Image (cartoon, rainbow, N blue to C red; front, side, top):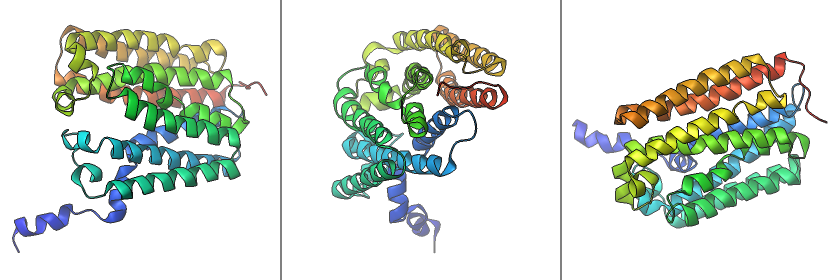
Length: 304
């Protein structure tokens, strides 16, 4: 049998694999990670692990439902973009009905888990996040305004609040600070991606900032947002949530992010935009990791 004959079987995905891809695993992993940070910071010691596991499962299921719904709504857009053309909905491997039922099942199951084994507040906040991302951002904002990432970023910034609410059954100022950091991190993160994927977005018809306002304006916005983001990352230290480990980490990581954004603004290249995008992921992950180190090594106590 020739290689051309066996190639289709090698790339053919199982039905379960197709459904799994719909949940956007890498995106959901970051969402769950940020929610877990909120859970851990909400308690002065280790959390109730049974509660944490239930919250993690519930949030993962609802986040996966939102991702699947996003794939459903953007099926034809994804098919026109090289970055997303491989998704099962874009390739026609799953029908719209199958995708809708899958999304509904995940969302319903996740909501039940959160309501029964966590608390109603977390369930309602997670449901509101689902509506914010799947409906307000995907259906309304994304195809209408180049500020879609800024406005829609509010729902993407919610995971630490969900984690905090799961442990404390309330939303404290510490959780809102974490939410603010992610909210301000989102635009430079996604605009760096959009810069080296501009032609993809142009073909899709989506009004992303590099398409509507050009590369230079977008690069300036990336730089300005990294400066504001840097200021926001100092708030946990000011609030008393962290110590010197986090502060030093925030300064070093923030300085590097600003350096990349400044270089990107002065002289653009796809390679630099890609580097900035990849570093932004490390920036957020290491920032929260440093926050955890301080949390478990310093006598910080949240207001009970």
